[in-house]
Amino acid sequence: MNMNENALIEKKEFIVPSLGETECEFSNEDFAEDFEGLQLSFPRIKIPGSGSLRFEMPSANPEDPEYEKTIDGVIIYNHRTCAYWPAGSEYDESVNPLCSSVDGKTGIGDPGGACAVCELNQYGTATDKNGNATAGKACKNMRHLYILRSGEYLPVMLSLPPTSIRPYSDFMNTAFVPRKRPTWSSVIQIGLKRVENGANTYSVATFKVLYDLEGEQLRQVKQYAESFRGQIRRMLQERALSSESRLETDVIADPDPNYMISENGEHFSVTANVGVGTVDGERNELPLA
Image (cartoon, rainbow, N blue to C red; front, top):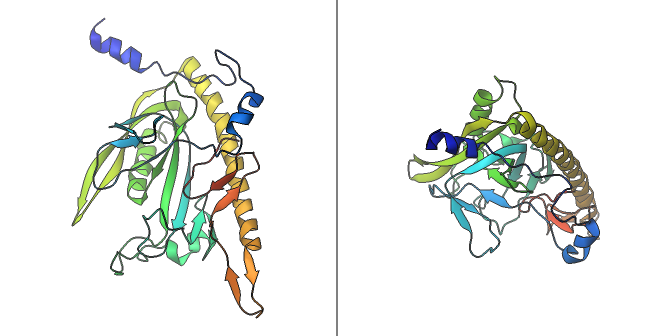
């Protein structure tokens, strides 16, 4: 057996986290005091700007991130999300979005309502930094991918911007749909390519299948994915309901009954019912339930 064959075998040894079993068993009580009042979240990765070809990966030292060319793993869950910022502030994380959607279907805020028929979610409504109309959407359509990497217990969350949505959709329609395989049934690799569009240079995600999971590995990943996906669906539902409730209560009536002031300082922040504190729905990741 040559070296290339050995490397291929090692590459296919995807290590699946064991649910509820570790070398040393820890109960919820063991963690309760250490993590009380802290916000638990998924490590988050973004598509880099300015045409960079390396991902900035979270590390144990936030001041010293790691940089990698690719992300290898299994997409165990993904969902749409939308956000609308004031013109010119689309990529300014210090500015709160005026409207957000956890599922890309129902917006909460201003204007709110059904995303599919929202005027701001139509092509041609975006503007550039000078206020000139562009071909894009005023509402930023994104997609969150939860990627489980070999040997890790918690997935990372990769946020795809609008420019990477089409490559992801094309990849799904060629790599998984024709073969009738779910996304968690294969180990994929996500890379980056540089795109130049006039004076703009940006990075776009690339996707390819490394290999399919089979047998016991496939069974273990399926078990993990089913447990995880159920928790995220419930969390998304709770976030949407909590956000609607918060908006209804965060309105202060002026002595003039015809004049209302909306107080949305924390915009999409939600106090979760799972003991993890306050969750900022647009800029913070979903905690595990």
